[in-house]
Length: 397
Image 1: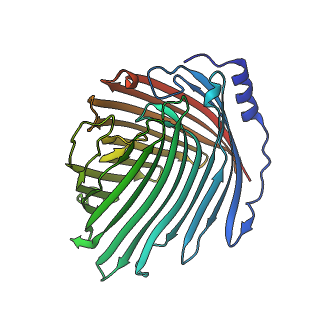
Image 2: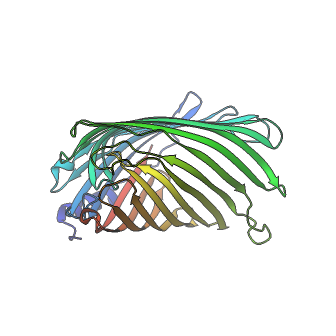
Image 3: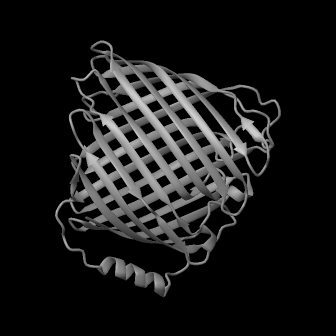
C-alpha cells in the first residue's frame, strides 16, 4: 500500500475538522421522517479491480443521500436515494457518478394479523466490482421482490415469495456487454412452534428462470429452468437452558440446474442436482455484544452467465462499549466452484474486515474501516490478495 499523499492528508483533515452545528430532527413528510446526509470518504486501495493485474490507487468519494422512514400499524416504509461519486488519482476510467434507489415496506409481524410480509424495489446505475468475473462493471440493475406469510391456523401458515431482476453490464475496460433477466417464484407451508413449542419447520417449492444476451460475443444463453425443494428449521434449536437467547434459522434443499451450450460451458452439460444449505445463528452475549455465525451453500449466476456453486461461512462480532462508539469485526471463508466451465476453475477466498464508528455529535460521525481479501485460484487472474483502508465522515440533517 503506497503512503498517503499530501492531497489525501489534506482531505482527511478537512473532513474531520469541518464543524457541524447540531440541528433539530429532520422534517416530517406524509407521516414519516426525512433525513438528508452527506458522506465524504478517502480510500487507499492496493488493487482498484478484483484481479491479479490491477494496481493500487487513492479513491475519493462523496455521497449525498436522502432517506425516508415511516412506521404505522399497517405498514412500515423505508426508502433512500443516493448519488455516490468516486474519483481515482490515477485510474480515470474507473471514475463514476452513480445513482442508487431503494424503497421497501413491511407488514408488521405479530400474533394479531393473519397476513405479514415485506416487499422491495431497488435501482442502481453505476460502476461496481464483480468478484466472480474479476472486473469492474458499468452496471444498471432494476429489481423487485415480495414475501408474504398468511396464517391458516394457529400454528400453520402459507408462505410465498417472488422476485424479478433486470440487469445490464458493460465491462469498464471493454471485456464484454450483457443483458440478464431473472425471475423466481417459491411457495410452501410453515409450521410454527411444532416441536416443544419453540421449533418451527417449513417446506417450499422454488422455480427460477434466467435469460442472458451477450451483445459483444453475439450469442444468446437461455438456461433451462432451475427448480427444487427447500426445507427449513426456525427457532430455539439448541437447549434453551444453555443458550437462552439464541436465534436460529437453518434450511437445506435440492436444486436441479442446467445450462445451455455456449462458449464457456462444457458441451452437453445436462441437468445437475445440487444440495443447497443456509444457516444463521445469532446470539446476543450481553447488552453490548452480538455474535452472528452464517453458512451458505448455493448456486449463483455470474454477470457473464456462468453457474457457480458457492460455499461460504462468516463470523461477525458487533461490540458497542458506549452509545457514541461502536466496533464491527468479521472473518469469512468461501469456495467458488465454476461447475460448467470448460476450463475447471475454483477460487478459495479468505476475507477479514474491521470497522469503527464514533459519533462526534448527534448528527456528525466518523468511520474507519479496513478490508482484506485473499483469493487463491487455479486461474491466474483470480489468484491475488488486496486490502483497503477507508476513512469517512458523515453529517446528517
